[in-house]
Image 1: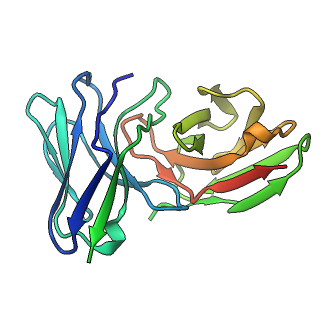
Image 2: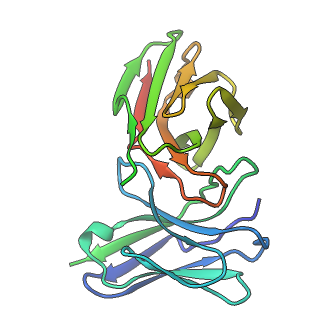
Amino acid sequence: DAKTTQPNSMESNEEEPVHLPCNHSTISGTDYIHWYRQLPSQGPEYVIHGLTSNVNNRMASLAIAEDRKSSTLILHRATLRDAAVYYCILSGGSQGNLIFGKGTKLSVKP
Amino acid sequence: DVKVTQSSRYLVKRTGEKVFLECVQDMDHENMFWYRQDPGLGLRLIYFSYDVKMKEKGDIPEGYSVSREKKERFSLILESASTNQTSMYLCASSRRPRSQPQHFGDGTRLSIL
């Protein structure tokens, strides 16, 4: 299964944009790139996913490199509620399960 | 919005007990999953179901079984609970195919004494 590499932690100021990087150099042609986040004592929450083209939704944007070996999750204006662990995941195990790494812990300062 | 509901947020059981964890989803999803989450180990797949009465073992099925009698409900059973099964248990559901996002419940924190 292809793996991802993310920084352990990042800091941001409230109301500023945040760019969370992810490297996935062994991605296969059919792997989708998923982003989830998890707040303490809650289950993971789906954020966004894409295959080749950049994607936007109400929560975030996903920028995918042309060679697909890296991607960036963009939160346009960080709020205190965005403080969480963010996981970049490739879909998935052979059974469709998500293989979570350690993720990036995002701290947001007021 | 998709809602995945797990029957308990916190549960305390004794060694040797048979434990049932229930999960219900309201979006007619074909796929349902049971994971456990432990510090430093991330999420690990226990069992997966892609249809009613269909199931597949995940990475760590030993000591667990599952039941899916109805499309919306997926139960995880600890046949004889042991202390090493103390963990956070997470249920998820998704549409086919595997590229579709999964929607998680809030988890059940299970302690086996």
